[in-house]
Image 1 (cartoon, helix red, strand yellow):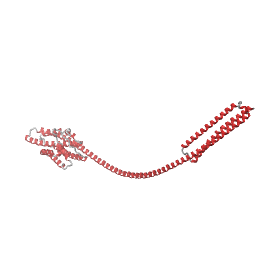
Image 2: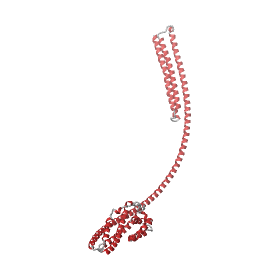
Image 3: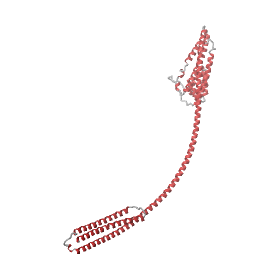
Image 4: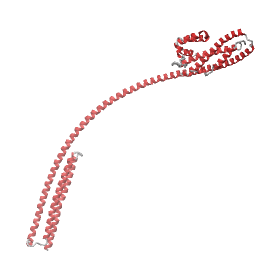
Length: 437
């Protein structure tokens, strides 16, 4: 029966499927005459190699069958139809058992009952762990049960004919007792058949339910596939539109970039030209500034030399005036006191400190003049290192103010020794007058 099931599964959706089904039906109808022939054809058929007993008594696994849900649903429908046919056959057998005559052989009924009792659910589960789908395992179990029931029915009919012939020949005396035993066996067998029929109906209902669920899953998968296809189409359209928009934006950006580059290039050229012009203007201004600085420095040097000449002239005139005044005082003093050269009076010690003070004043004046010359040198250096702070007129005015301030300061300082000398001279004359009196 496993070879039959393997051949059915292997021949499904092939040109040999009808031939294999017809061959299996003929085998189930006439097992005695064609059992050896069918076994030989199964051994020679390549499809029968799906399941074949090994040398060590173990069952080889099914070859891998890439079956879709539609194939499994078709197999379930076919197996359900076969189970319905077998259930109808069992119903006919159970209906025919009560009408059997009581003279039927007892051994055939007992053997049929014993074989039916041995047909358990555990014996049908042997070797089912080798299949990859629970649905296929259930179908194999159902096919095994149908095949076993058909075999038992055929063996029962064969033994029944044999025992009928033996009973007709023997015609024993214990007919009533055997009739009662046969009736009991009929009742037990009928009960067993009804039980198996109910189990078959439950299995058929379960298979139909699973088939319905499988069809629902297939329809759901088809719906999901359609939804996925629609989503993919929408996504492709959106991607195409997005790509077109991005290409347009990129083109606009490239145009803007080229325009910006041209603008920047023109601006750069303009800035470079302005920079060159500004550099030239700066160089011209620097040259003009250097010329102005040189001219102002020449003027300043000329003014300083003129000021030094004026100062030297004033100093010389001051020295001559001072000498002349000193000589006049001495000439006035000597005729009035002719003996003063022989005997110095009390005012002679005073004249010596006065001369010493005048010498100190002259040395201080020279030091002050040297300091002023040093300051003028420093100012000249600062003027050489100083940057242009305004126009030439403002710079010239600033230098003129500094020069006037220096001139006033020098004049004031030069006038101080005269005042001091006049004061000391007045004091000396007053002292002389007091001494003479």
